[in-house]
Image (cartoon, rainbow, N blue to C red; front, top):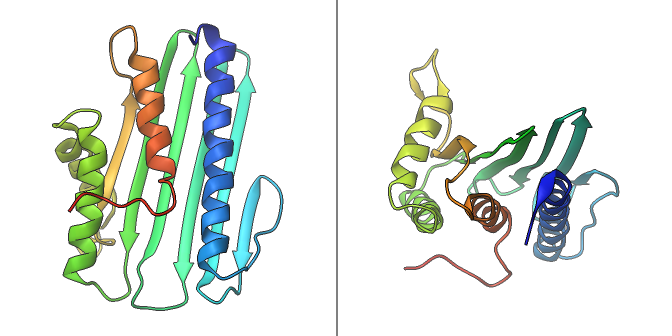
Length: 193
């Protein structure tokens, strides 16, 4: 059982680092052998499938404050395949902790089936936490991912959330599990129909 600040911090660092390893391995597989560089910021450039992809992990502690995050940005070569970005974070100060994140699909050319599939996957994932969560996180993303000078969305939308700290004795575990499952889906998995 997780107890104490260090256990939570170690668990979050493991989630973020594991997510980076899994995402990098899957993107390398999809790109037919292109390789990411090494380090905390893993960058692939000039691949056959991905023009550029980056997967970055961060962690910082200062006194009683701790934060860790994972950011993913993917730009495919094919303009008919949407760009993707996701950012997941954890913040802790004393006894206060929360998870946050944002996921967005940004196509050059929008296709209704891409938007439908993307939002179905996100809704299914959000339902594992709370059936009302998707609507709230989608509204937040719709507000956040807007081009105000054009009064239009930045992409196909997604979800965005901050201050996720489920209540109850297993609240931290629920928040961590929700975030971890959002970072990387096992190879070959798919959303429900």
